[in-house]
Structure formats: C-alpha cells, structure tokens
Length: 403
Image 1 (cartoon, rainbow, N blue to C red):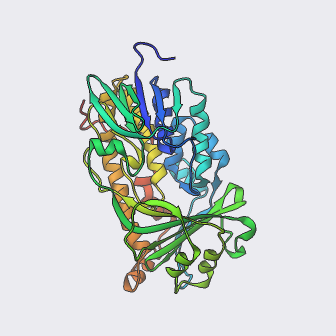
Image 2: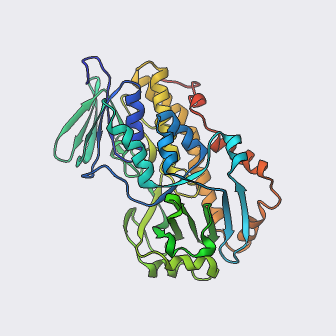
Image 3: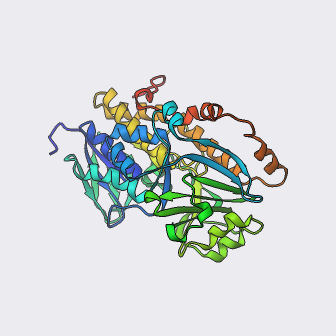
C-alpha cells in the first residue's frame, strides 16, 4: 500500500534488469510500477552464463538460492580453436574458483533466471505490473517524473528507471546517442540431450573460436538440454533486431571449420537470429529524477558473457545507493551512476577486445593461441579478479557523488 509520503518509482521494462531493479527499489521501501510492452512478463532466448559477480548480486536481491536451484554448475571454461580443434586455454571453476571468488560459475536458461527474480517480484506488496504498455516519451519537471505510453496514458512517480533495452526510449531522452549495429550476427538455439553429439556433452561453456566466427555450447536444465550460440561477421548491412534464422545462412559462414564443432550446426531444429548492437560508453547516464540500467545503460555484445550479470550488479548497486542515501532518490541515482559507469565501460570495451580475439585469423589466430600457454590456474584467477570479484558490500563509489 502506497502512503502519501512513500517514495514511488516507475521501472520501464520487465526483463531481467527491470525486474531486478523493481525488486531492489521495493526492498528499500519504494513503491514501484513496472511497465512492460509485451502482453505478458517473460523472456525469450536460450541460455546465459552467470559469473560469481552475478550470484553476489542475486544474493543481495534475495533470490540467489532460487537461481542456484535452476542453474547448472560447470567444471571449466574452455576455448578451443575451431580450425584444428586444439585447446587454446581453459580454467577450472570448481572448489578453488569458488573459494577465490566466493561464488560459483554457472549456466542457466534465460527464462529460469528471469523466473527466479519474477517469483520474488510477484509476491512483493510494493510492486505492481502493467503489461501491454509501450512507453514512447519521458517528461521531467515539477518535482515528478512522467512517462507517456503509446495510447496516451500518463504514468507519474517520483523517479523513473529505464530498463528498456538497447533501443531505450528513456536513454534517448536522457542522453540522445545512437546504438551502434556491430555487424555481428548471433544465432541461438536449444538442443535436446538426445540430439547432442556424445563427444560434446561437456559440463562447461566451450567456445570454438574461428576466423570471423565462433560457436559456444553448454548444458542447461540439468544437462537435459544444451545451449548453442553461433556468431559471425555478416556480409550484409544489418539492422538491430530479432527474427527467425536459417541453417543455410549459418552454414555459409562456417566453411573451413573442423568437423567436431561443425557437427553442431546441423543439430537445432529452429534458430533465433539476433543482429547485435552496443553503444559507446558515456560519462553520464541520467539527470534529475531519471536514470537507466542494464542494456539501456551499457548494451554490450556477448563475448564476455556479462550482459545479464552487469544488469544484476546495476540493480543491487541501485538498491545499495538508495539505502545509503536514506531514500533521497535523486542523490541515490547519481551515486548509483558514479558507482557503475567506469566499471561497465571497462566491461563494454573488454568485450569488444575479446570479440577480436575470438574471431582472429591468420597470424593473429596464432598469436591468440599462444596467449595462455603455460598460464597457471591462479594466474587465470588473478586476471579475472577485477570482473568476478565484485561485491555489493564495496560497490558504492563515493568519490564524485552529485545530488
């Protein structure tokens, strides 16, 4: 029940980031109206990877155990050369990894992680949904924030959080930059266990890195399914979006790939095709009573498997900032942004660099294959400390807090 003095917020977008943001705010006593353009709250896609930093954020939101029950805990992370099927590098994510980072590495179906947060959101008395509501404008002023939907409906609260994805309407108003279509196309599919080649039933995310292309596979739902993701540099001009894909197009980009990974391309019965986009990092995300979160703040390609992880970190940090600022939401938004902009920019830029490594060819491929020769497990962990070592207890950066 909202009282006359209770802070209120609108969260635009009901994906993983939007649900997590709504939960984070509600846990701090803010009444949230969550607006979703689809008729139902749900997720499309297949699998995602969850690093220890994601579990730290999920725990802060109170849904870590629900996610763990649905996740598959992997044994290793592996990169293979897709041309000659040799191992480029890999590191263990078992007991020593968990001890170092305080949490596991896991893979999970996107719908299952979404559901793990949705269950908590649905029973929270301070959160209410409105579906089939496509936001087309943001208005700030008079001590309130208002969003206008495509039917002319007006939704007003103390603050607005835009979690409305790569093509964010809220970001358009706050920043006004353009999303950058990368030219990289991603196909995603789920393969049933019975259709998975026996020699590829590996309890690990396996990256097969090839020239201008790569594919990834890992188990889902207790190993009863496997996620398959293939990526290539498109020959055609691309427009950001999702549509049905074709096996013929995939095969045309994977000529010269070793038969072992190539066999996976024949296993899916259907594909979803994503033309990907990201944005250049910005020094400012919002102002006044509005901010952005998740893909609306820092859309990134998939090469570090951190898109959902960063959205979860965002939400947990937003909640921590509201708590620290004792309900002063404008101050909390600036503290949240100051705590997230540099870190997420580093992830976006590192993701682009990792994509270059994945798709190396010629001499660059040979250089890539030499990078991790002789590296110890502890050296791998040291290299990933900046990413996987995130904790909500130390997430706030007070150095340039602005009201």
